Image (cartoon, rainbow over the protein chains, first blue to last red):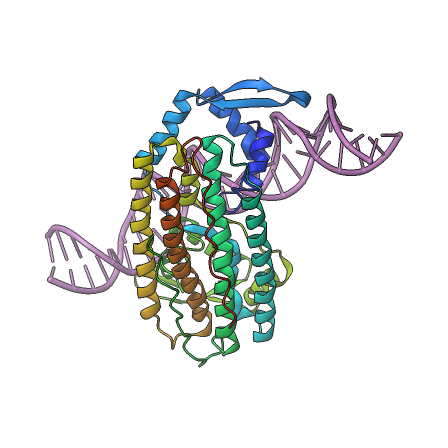
Length: 177
Length: 177
DNA sequence: TGACTCATGTAAGAAGTTACATGATTCT
DNA sequence: AGAATCATGTAACTTCTTACATGAGTCA
């Protein structure tokens, strides 16, 4: 892939997992070439440069997966904001959540579209994308459910002093395949 | 709260939403004081400094919520890794997912514990935390479901060239409260 | 008295964002 | 011919992480 292609991958299947802009991607590609983890294997019109991963590059990925500890925390600005929702009057807070709800729905639908349009004959490495897109779809659907719960709680006065203790709605247990 | 208190809040109820270390928090508190958004309203042993939000600070939060566009994308390193899972042999990939599964379970249980131990008589701004902890609980439970789906797909040979097209398991529609 | 927790800070470097900057090709 | 898209890069700045650095209070 080229830097341009990668920018599109990040803005589509990886946007809900790890965003990256072209200004970050191009210098990183240069670094990877310098370190021998990728190499330029083609070109095209308008100065297009196509890169491929080298055996050392594959080793580096394996080493990353095997030797480093995953970080299970996430970073979600749209949720962080709701930590501060007490600063708005109740009716405005509810309107705020309704706007979020529409956005989550839009994102979920976009993910479903992407899943439907995936080229399944593509190479194995591109199939990894299927896992992260499924994740994105489920994530945004989960946000929808959570927003509905939050709206109910706030309508009931949860963010008012002396308001009721929220009802903890237990989601269904994980399905066992 | 003090910087030390805030560090704990970030490592508990906010860790699944927006991580921050003390080395980021202390300079930021100094900046907020300089800008008049918070002020020191108490102290304690060992140089402890307690800050409170000022009316200008509340205005700044309201302004943030009202005037800036939320970013609905998330950043999840543990999911990004799975984008590269094709680089491992199938049995190792499955073992990898099993490890993740245990971690997600652990995180979900931790969130449930936090919910159970929340002091509900605390002030309104601390109640906002209840929303993000619920989000974290649901997030990790969702990851569990997703991991189970991914394991089934990979066991069926999804990451092998020519392997089967994955079955898209439709999650239940959002509940309407 | 020794270990642990509480408590605050700084510094260097890495990572990420926003804006600047340019130009070729394709499509209508 | 003009607009849109393809395509690559750099620069300045902000944010974030990791490591360094210090010391007081508490508890066994």
